[in-house]
Image 1 (cartoon, rainbow, N blue to C red):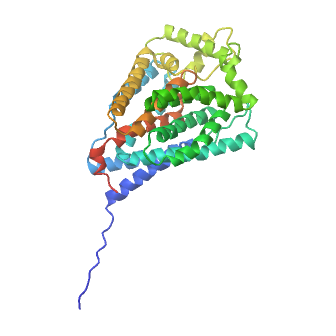
Image 2: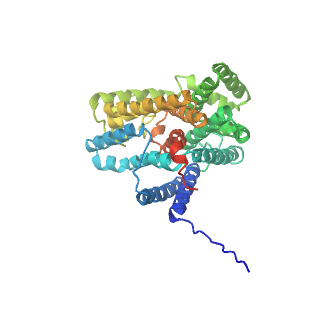
Image 3: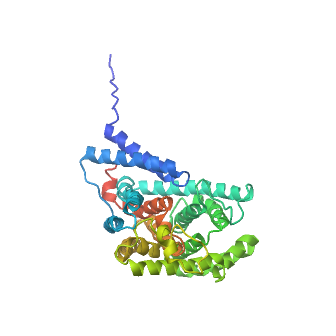
Length: 396
């Protein structure tokens, strides 16, 4: 009598750890639009799992070329903290620099086709978040400047910034994807409506620049569609939203007046402390000292402008390094785009950068932890996807 032997191979511990790390990455990316506390917990677990995996594999961490500029930015931030108006408070604020570790983690874990899965999670959770915002506006009466839709997040500015990044991710998939375009086409209306209902002008501007860039990259002639789309949205928008949009061009608008005051405040701070600034999280501490008479608010948490805030907080050398980061990232992404490499994710990252820069002229979004984390994920994904040499060795 013949007998057959069935052997069952036990899962290799390294395989299980790799699956766990990838699961933590997907959970972290999903939580970014749901709960900052949950996202931070998952990020901590993700970092621990990733470090253990690197030790187990006896491999060194790696990162895209632009990460060097972020490290330099972090070093200059610590130098600024040492010369801060209140070094202890500034050093505590520097804990945000730990978020820069997202870049090598995503670069290592989301390699090859996994990067597309991460982007799909961003779009899917973003669609659910958009529906929450729409319900808040229509049912809970979050329909005015005093109470705006904020989704599952804690602030409408963070919510609108996240919607901007998700909208650019979906738009890039819709314009450059060779397949799987139905889902982004279905969720795009909800994303646009939810973003409009936040009453957040900087996110509107950032999204227009980001989508406009995508149109130009796809076909320069498509750029002519953007004004027509904006005009149509303006016509059908409720009066409150239409008035909010037109107030952008009103120099007498109190918010606009305060923006001009903040520009003057930032310029005065930089003139006094050009090398190291006043220190991270110190602008509110010195605001009254530099505040002009025509300023509307007695104090502001920041200067609502990314380059100005960096220069005032951390000094002109830190601003130069931050500009190096922007230039190095855009140049690397542009080369990938020209080489026809990972075009969906590459255009997503380029659009995210354009949106961050445009919106960042009116809001310090680079200092918003939730926004920064999602932004770093999106600009790293194309570099991770391009690691075809490592994709074949990625454990199932």
